Length: 260
Image (tube, one colour):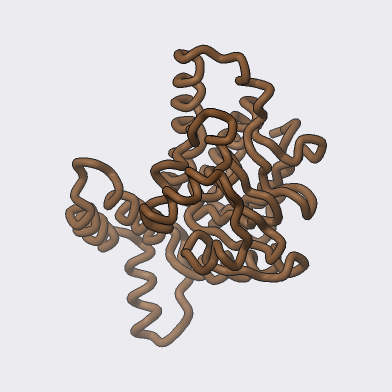
């Protein structure tokens, strides 16, 4: 697939998506959101890809926000539609993928950029990264899931402070409050993220997909996460990966998972 705003490369079971809008600090516009959906869907459907890494072009910005020029004159109805379509097409889509998605936050992750990173399954930040949700300084609120995912990750009080002050935090503070899993020097960001991806690849992709579903179930209204876990646990017993994993353990060898 050819993309105008993305670069996609494949390497040893890892799919890399680089947001490539350097003149706009990789800001999200409608076209980029659609391309991200299509690129992620393509990688998720590729059985050779076990992990997806999302990052931004260059060293200045992961995604410096949404492209404000696209919606500055929107009506109430258009604004609501923008948020709904964006959440369904990209942010909720990422969260519910069966392939793990890691955000390699290489610089500014603001507004929609932080919301994109939070939709990924976890986040690694460079030591130069800065994160925030500045939307209220523009007279609007985060609309791509920020008011929901940020409290889940850092707690209600810290989320309220970040949203209401519209301020930025640095990578170390993001690590301290649990917003990112690791902070590494900028030059080591992709290599470190790849090393984590390679650790994931050693494990059963079927089991990982079911684990993602079970964890996400805890945050869905009306869904009992424990029941989802029980069903998913049971289904694992019918997979070839389970047979291979248990056999390899008993034979004291490394498992060769095929993803079925």
